[in-house]
Image (cartoon, rainbow, N blue to C red; front, side):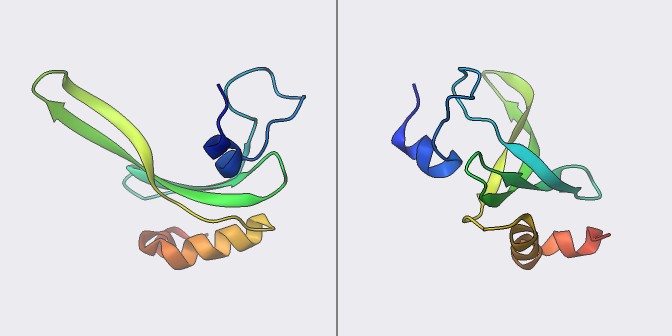
Length: 102
């Protein structure tokens, strides 16, 4: 079921969605940290606004579930009118990102 919080973060669903739980979004830009454990993506929401997400991959040792790999966001930005604005803010907020700039 789609929630108010999901609408706030991802934008309202449209009739063009495929009926899944989440609206469609596009990754328009991605940079990986040199060790491959973290990355930043700029994402276009269905309503045309943009945001960035810094994510990380962790290797977890759990006594009950055993060893496993987990991925998840470290931080999510606010909303921006353009992908360039979101990218510029990502370079300001994510310190390691400046080292992998093209």
